[in-house]
Image (cartoon, rainbow, N blue to C red; front, top):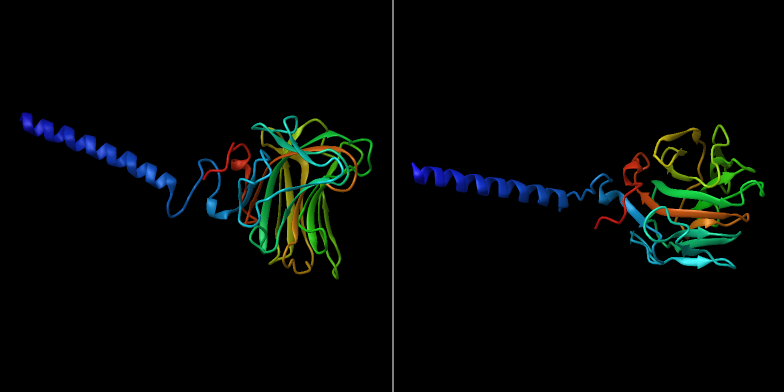
Length: 261
């Protein structure tokens, strides 16, 4: 009887140890890596916490150029989380990641990021912050436009076909407030859209839009621009993520503090 009880005890020890190990192995996900509370790593093509000038992960180039007369810089004031954030303080002060292939941006994608208007809204028409795929057309970009509060807007600038411009139903972006923004495109059916969320990741009322048109072929991107590159104003940006699935929500990644590898 004593040996039987000992055998049963040993059996349960090994059973629960194996179960715990299996959970750990599955979480690491050698076949399908998954981040706790975030998306499958296989979908992520770009991840930058704005902590330094080398991005956390990129399927393409991972070196960040800081452009502009000031120029754009990483500052503690511009952070949503971590130690630093991306500060785009003046017109044409922005960050650029050179692209020579479609590793980050393919035929479809979704971009998520935090944005905060520090100054400039109400003094410029339009106040403008852009996350832009190309400096040449065709390209797409997310903008803030208006004298404050600002409208959110996504554009697809074509060369031969008519441009696509989708604007929020109301002026829904206020200064001195963090917003989580997601915008997306699908080249296969010529659709674009965006949704803006508040600091608690609840949808901001009347601050979304989607539409379709005829896209010029996106082609090979030449750069990925992050920040203000048109009108003066000080903008903070943090935690930029790109995935290769336009339907993949990034809300669960908005407050992840580091790239999960």
